[in-house]
Length: 81
Length: 287
Image (cartoon, rainbow over all chains, first blue to last red; front, side):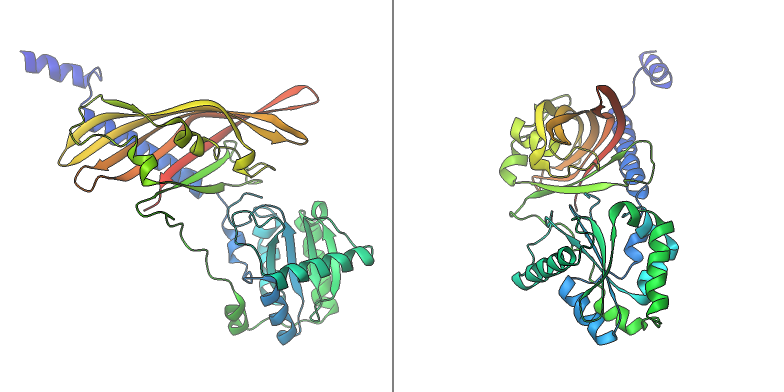
């Protein structure tokens, strides 16, 4: 009788076994983090950025072509810009 | 620029094929300081732009000729429009009758991906912090920060080996605040040192103990002030966090630690009118 009462409470969602609730919390948290990550644009990373201005200038001189220099504040790589 | 013209297919194609592209942070935020030689070169370019009455803003597109002289500039508000930046680049390609770069040349100059964040202290716990505006508009994208809790910091709230279900611990204030300072949006002010924590708490509660593992529910809330324009505390951030963590009792270490915003808002004012914006926050322990 006691077991049946417990099962009924679980089915009604009144009582949820700790591990199941915990699994759901963790899964929801990780899904939300992934959703934030997936929402970012990574297209700009397809551009073959040189490691430094001096590297870019050396390559431009060797290849006789222009440098595209984008100067900004913050950090392009981490979106803090 | 990052999620605007620099993510535009046509611009990417032009920059990849015909230019040697490089980006440069004026304040080297989250980056190593440049060499003296690079810093001198940056100043030389800046002075040349000034002398020739070209655009001299710190956020700017500059095209250098093969001899490194300044060939052209474009201010940010123009460069941010792909319909202006595209023709600007195309004209340089056409005027210079440029041929596409070889795959070998591109490979030789492309920077390696930035290394993964590793703890600076033995046993340190590195947290990766992601924020964005909840409207999911692509104009600002996602911002990322990293912080490290030293073993002394994280062990102060690690569960006891014999912790019982429902045991609650509070993360020490300074340890929690170190995290809260990074919970601000991809906004013009990006430096966590300028983020002031007004108040907040972060707690852990044991929800299960089994097989040498303690599972925890995480809850927190914080209120922060960040600069907006000339006002050092003009922006207000309120955030409520929920999440989960796992602790290995044999290794005495967290094996996972993740938080997301249940509610997060960035509030600023424009001419006295409130401009609230919903945010999304995610925090995860680096492997």
